[in-house]
Image (cartoon, rainbow, N blue to C red):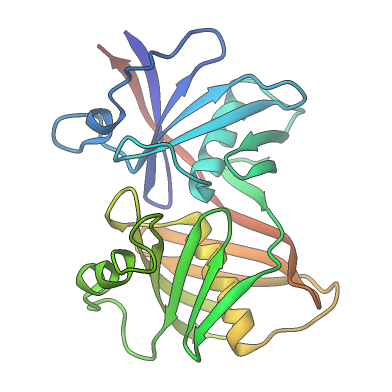
Length: 262
């Protein structure tokens, strides 16, 4: 029997397993556990493990069963759970993730997750940016409504084209509502479907917005809010001459239920 707990962050849901005091079976059927018809149902599965010099390590699997890169909402959820388990220093945790070190600050069910600095990207055209925020993202801006946008069919033509097919890429469609308020939908690789939210995608989209549409340079903190189908998130960041620093992904992370997998 494997004990698990399920969390969600703006509709991005995850199965979490405590691997600190037990050996998680290498044959763990991640894909089946994440299946919404024959399993628990989730966008991904994470294992919380010990790591010297850190409060914990986050091991992340996509719902297709494969180890994957950083997941922003997953990082916020596992940090909230670690806090509930009494890990860390009061309301601050330092942990290791697929893309390196992260800091999480806990305030009730709101979690602030510090993302890695970003100093490189590729401008595809005047409305599109390719950028890596722990996971690779293709961000496209449109002036049309994204609610009825044919996301799946359009995103698959990008995710599976010659450029991205082998490694894969997450695809985001975005609309600027106001300068500091955006709306987005995401197709996630590894899930191979639309998810209700994507933390690295929200981060990538806000930074892409700043790249294409301009924002202040210097040490001034900037805040942009994002509406996803699963709820609202915010990104706080500083734009410098070399890129972006002090990037924080901010939003809720909530426990859904717990159980045992036989």
